[in-house]
Image 1 (spheres, rainbow, N blue to C red):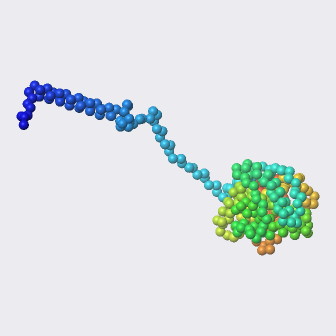
Image 2: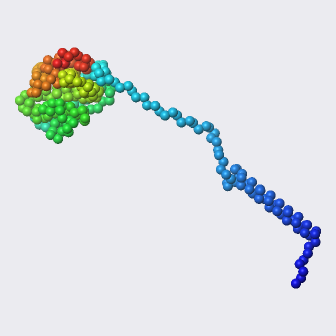
Length: 311
């Protein structure tokens, strides 16, 4: 075997210097590469930069505070309702419908036509009193009547507050029509206007406040008096409408006399059970007579009247 080759010191020194130069270059190149990856402008592999908004982010507003309107006391609502200040009921030039009252369909058509006239007359006044207006529905009384829509005067008519409907017993009026057509038509006109008076009370929140007042009363006598105020007001509002539209409805001569006689002979005295919840015949005319002449719901504030006037 040949002995290992020996290099001279000069060669070894030159090789060592070359290696050092190469290592230095590699190290420098490595630092350059690392530095390039740390740049946030030119290289996509750089760490993400955080950009500040040009305008400051707005601070969220404080939570909205709901201010509850003060509750109107029941006594104020029934005694100082804006309904009493809206002025006279306008004449809507509605003639009495010509339908006969001897059948179910004709009585329903008659009632719907009258209630449409009542809608036209009372709608603007309810809105003027700052209450939303809704037309009343018309229905005929049946055995399938919902349990919450029974009461009032089921033998003739009643108002149902849960669905805001005027309900009429067509059979009762068909029987009366056979005996006296004038009496039947006049009575149904007044009855529809009375039940619509309850609709006006419903829309203006008089109904709910009167019910509330009655619920808080301790004695039966006080509750009956409150109910009489409520019912007498509905009769008064009916007379207001009839008086405002007496010309177009033909409330003159025999028809007017018939209405006056019927009003003066309606009241708790004619209730078979003698319950004093609607007002005496004297009280009925005490409110209806002046209201027919004034045509103004301001005449119907029964809730501020002395007890003697709502007997």
